[in-house]
Image (cartoon, rainbow, N blue to C red; front, side):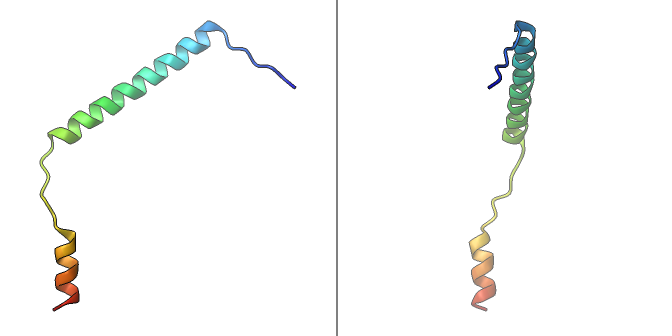
Length: 52
C-alpha cells in the first residue's frame, strides 16, 4: 500500500485550475444566453415528410 500526500502549493495550483475552468463555463453560458436562436419544430418536419 502506498500513500500520497500533497503539499499546499499543489492544492493551490489545483484550486486555481478549477477557478479558471469555472470562469470558462460562466463565460460560455453568458455567450450562449446572449445569442439569438430560431425556434425549429423538428417533429413537424418529420411528420410532414412521413405523411406526404
